[in-house]
Structures are given as structure tokens and as C-alpha cells.
Image 1: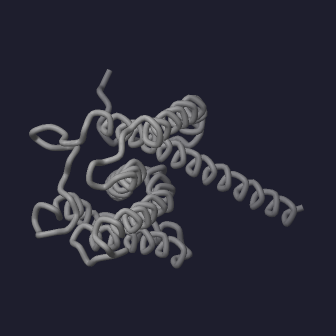
Image 2: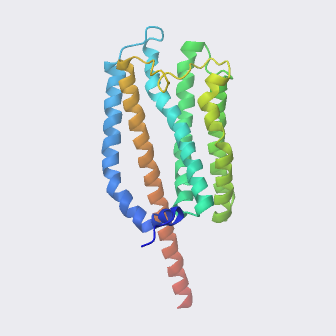
Image 3: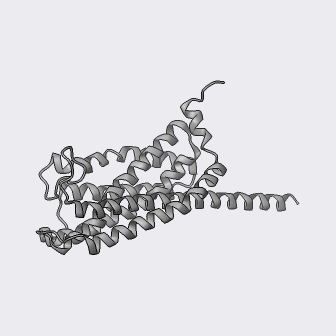
Length: 252
């Protein structure tokens, strides 16, 4: 028996019917776990974690802002990876995954910008500053909008998919810029305090709700992507069925 190549293994999971069956099996548990983590994280964030000795109660914005910023980068990284798979292996579900992730990633990016503004006002005295981290995240938001606009502007699906995939791959260079902007430039934004070589600098009673919220939001993100992909597949099936019925009526 010959071993399957990487492209053959990918194509084995390209069947929409197989995807629908697998996703239906995992959706309900993912919903329960993600909402449970978010509920637990919110309880610890609002009631069980202490105020910061400098920032006071405003530090609680961190428990939404930081996971939203992480997912803004995660969402675009997922789009870029799926776009690469679509261009290289012609995987039929890869473009669908990238397209489904775009509005969700854009929503989390917008949430990160808004919560960052509310957090920055008491800390910096301004709603917005042209800081390297803030500016690169704003560019990321525009990249999301540009990606969605390409899909809407080009009528032919194949051409739209190729153009959007190229934009996703080119725009992916902005993700490491966001990640390392606080290292490369003199910035008002605080440096990394969780994922550090020498360990987190966040107090354990604050780190726990932060990680609960981050994990809950991540699973929630995955659930929403799966739901959108399933909806697109069902919409395509309905459209195909209507076209077939119209063709049958025309022939009759």
C-alpha cells in the first residue's frame, strides 16, 4: 500500500460532506466549553482578581483587550495559512475557511482598538496616539476590510479567491510587525508581559482570568468560523439545487 502525499492527505479532508459531518460532531462541545471558559473568566476578571496598584479598576479592560488583540493576529494568521493552502494545493475548503475567518477577525481587531482606546485614555491621557503598536493594528483592521472588499467587488469566485489570497499573504508581514513593534521601536505601549523568555510578569491572580478569557475567546473564534463555513456550504447547496430545478423546468 502506497503512502499518501501531503496534497492527497489534504484533499481527503476537502469533501464538504465530510467536513459537515465532522464539524457537526464538534460544534456542540466547543460551544459549551468556550462559553463555560468565558463565563468563568469573566467571573474571575470582574470579582476575584484585584485592581492594579497603578491602574486601579481600569486594568479589568485588559481581560477583553489583550485576548481580542491576540485573536486579531490569530485570525489573520489563519487567513494567510488557509490562503497559502488554497493557492498551493487548490483545497476547496481553504478559501472558504479564510473568507469565513475574515469578518470575525475584523470584529476582534475592532474590539481590540476600541478597548485599547478606553484603556489608553486614563493611562496616557488620550484616546488615540500614533504609537507603533496601535498604528500597525489599525493597518491590520484595514487589511481585513480590504480582503472582504475584494471578495465583494469581484464577481467571478475563482478570481476573487486568488486576489484575496494574494492580499492575505502579502498583508501577513504586518503580523510580526505588530508582535515585535514594542521591541523594535520606542513606543508608549507596554512590552510583552505574558509570553516572555523569562516567564510572565503578570501576577498569578491576574494571569488566571486572562488565560481563561484568551482560551475561551479562541474556542469561540473557532466555533464562529465553523458555523460560517457550514452556512456557506449549505447556501451553496441551496443555490445549486435551485439552479438544477430551474434547468429542469426550462427543459420541461
